[in-house]
Image (cartoon, rainbow, N blue to C red; front, side, top):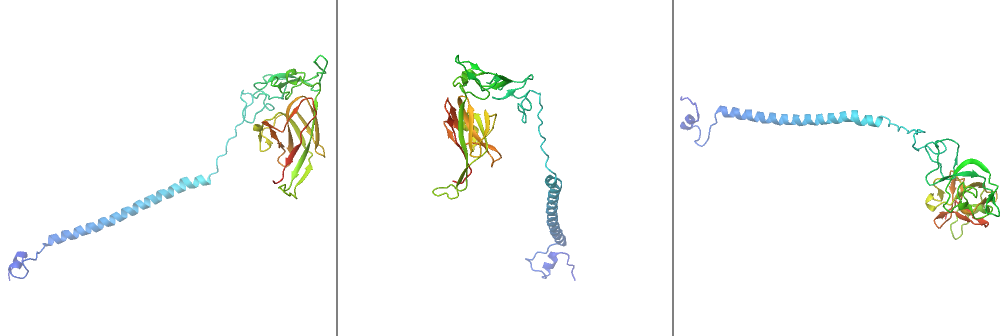
Amino acid sequence: MPERSNGQDLRSCGLVPSKVRILPPAYNKMKKEKEKKSVEKKENSKKSVFVVIMVVFLLAALALIFFVIPLKILPETPEIPIVPMCGNGICEQGENHTNCGEDCCYPEGAYIPVIPNVKCCEGLQNGGNYDMNCVLNHDGECEGCILVGASVCINCGDGICGLGENYCNCLEDCKIGATPTGVYGFVSLALGNCMPPVGLSCSKSFLKTEVKIYRAVRESEVEGNYLKNPGNPVMIVNSDEYGYYYVRLVNGKYSVFVEDPFNEHKEYCNSFSNGYACAIEVNNNLAKLDILLDRSTH
């Protein structure tokens, strides 16, 4: 029997059709190896993606453990308070003329102690601290001026007989009027529901509280009917059980505030005119100003 060593012999014997191509065994082996490598490549690709995902997940977990969680657990660092240093020539937060006159200037109406390196604020003068109950004689001079203190910061020349001023230390502002003039009024309190037209639960009564007289206060110094930065009043009196108060003041422009016992004892005013709050002008006549502390619903 003839040896069938290749496809040509098989075809010549009529065992294989002439159009059929017989692939050598080496080709089949190469094809199988190629397919195997393709499968291995796909498997390796899947493994690489898995490794990348695991690395990203691990890094995210480490960031969460070492950075995010500690920030939430650790307490906030407290702010270190700035401690003012009296004597450095700077009026710092927490300092004023009462606790550090060496750094802070003295405002209008403030009394200056007899110590070095103290001064009035800009625009003020150092005036003698005299008794304010002096009386002008026929020559227009003040009699009975009694020096009751070293000095006081005044704003002499502004046309207002202001804090610390009197006939003795600032005749220019306090020259009108021989004696202080009486100022009076009533302090009342409104509570309940005062909405019109009936307001059956609305109640008004007199209020016994502290009345403070200031040098004329502008509307810009008041917020929500309350004085923003209370200073040194010209005079303080108490209204009686009927809400009545009375003070004696030299001629000038003033503002009347009352202490609100229902709101942290803030100083209250409820009328505004010509740019001033609860203003009253003293000019040799008995003057009246009523204050209504309105805590009702409208």
